[in-house]
Amino acid sequence: MPNIPYASIETAESEEIRALLEAIKERRGGKALNLDRMLVHSPPFAEGWNIFFRKVRRELSLDAKLRELAICAVGVINGADYEVRQHVPVFHEAGGTPDQITSLYNIDDAVNDAENFNAAERAIIRLSIEMTRNVKPTMETLDAVKAVLPGTQQVMEAISVIAAYNMVSRILLTTGVDMEEE
Image 1 (tube, rainbow, N blue to C red):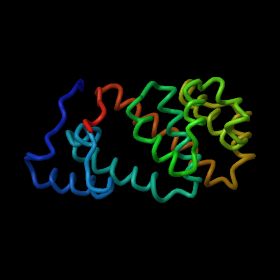
Image 2 (tube, rainbow, N blue to C red; image 1 turned 30 degrees about the vertical axis):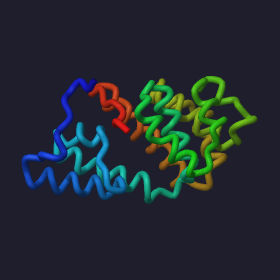
Image 3 (tube, rainbow, N blue to C red; image 1 turned 180 degrees about the horizontal axis):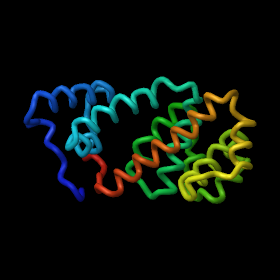
């Protein structure tokens, strides 16, 4: 049960909100999620969110598997089941395995799990843990990420994805967004 009621997509009161919902549905392949129904309570925020996350999900040079691994790791660390459940299928599409997701649920062991994760993946998990729990990662962790990614742009994008999806977790958990009914 959400802590703030969802906005009704079907009976949106203004043309502005209806147009915004159409843009959101277009980005999501024809449907709006409960998260979107929460965000449209603030049309300017929802509009900015839609533009920002379209770019995060479609325009970064960071490898999609690493991006989705970071997103799932953040969701696991924060206990944001909604976030994890939305992104596990995308992680699988990007080449992630069921064993990797299982390992992520014990995040403190996953960071050292060389059987399921390569060096780049372990560095991203470690960065996700430190940025989520401590906000500021150690230089050792940042240096490990720099060593496994091809350039500064990808490092910055990894940092930014982790930061962005920490924001997603906090909104999901504070507002009580629950999974869509099937």
